[in-house]
Every structure is written in C-alpha cells, then in structure tokens.
Image (cartoon, rainbow, N blue to C red):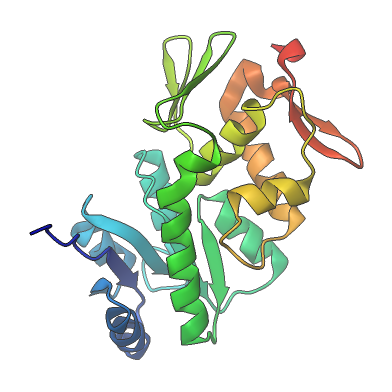
Length: 235
C-alpha cells in the first residue's frame, strides 16, 4: 500500500491568540499541520526545516515580522513567508516583498482568502521547476550557473543567495535571453497562482536581484515601455 504523504506543516505567528486560533482551526480543516507561535522570538525557536510555510504577523511586541524575515533570509532560509498585517499601504506591501516575503494579506482578512493564498504559494513552490523548463537543467551564461533543480546560482566559485521568488524571476529571464518580457508576463509566470500582485512588485524584485548579482547586475536590462530582458551582451 502506498504511504500517504504527510500534510504540509505551517507555522502561524501572531501575538493575538484569537487570530492564531481562527487560523489554526480553518487551516487544519483544510488538511494542514498547524503550529502556533505568539512572537517572532518563539517562532525562531520552533522553526525547523520540516515546515513548508510561515504565516507571519508584522507588528508584534519584540522582534517584528519584517526583522524575522530579514534574519531568516540572511541565514539563507528560503521558507515561503506570507505576511498578515494591518499595515496595508503600497509602501508597506513593497517593504514586505523587499525583505523577502512571498505574499502579503491585509487585516482584517477573509479566512477563505488566507486559505487560497496559502495553497497558491505552496503550489507555486512545488511547481517552480516546471515553470522554467526541464528539471535537472542548468542555465550557463558566462561564468554564471543557474541550477534549476537545486535552485542554486553561482558566479564563478561564489554562491549567490536569492529568495525563492528572486530565483524564479532570474531563471525566467535568463532562460530566454533573446526576449523582452513585460511585467505582466513575469507576473503571470512567477506569481501565476498568487492574486493581487502589482507591476511595482516586479520592479522591487528586479532591484534586489541587481544588487545581489554584482557585476552581472547590468545584464538585467529594462526596455522602457516594454519590460525586462536578460541581455547576454552585457556580460
């Protein structure tokens, strides 16, 4: 008899216990394995590689959700993160994406929306390799190597740490360097399962990519009015 796969483990982090209870009940009803933490510090203690996603409040006593995300990304932990917060301006959303978040849901929220977003982010993570071509393929451009199976990028002997979304954007552009992709095309591919993504979100991720790529930053070029391209002539 084929063994059934274990349900995805989700760590819910919010200092409001009633919100944690609501999310725990509804996500567990959808088949997820839920653990709650009531501060970023407690989340750091509980978080292990067994978790598939972090559902994270931004404004908490002590360490904020943004600070926790920055700490995780610095340590090269690329677990998908969805922010839950009452801070809902465009700048707040862009801050969430810029520190390494994968999605952003404003409070008060619809439980159905949270469930849909969780499923979308997990599905995007699972199918990311298929979106960029054959599993096991490696894109080599100059001395840059993009391993689509291991989700690793290296320039020469140096490994470059990217978030999951940053990696997907880079792999998408570098996989077809002869093409200019509109922001809408990038959203439809990289964020295809995630609603409410704006074109400004693409620009934020491109900016962060350029900073991390060092001398390869100039290879991601912008055609005003059209979109972005990975231009091998700039290598």
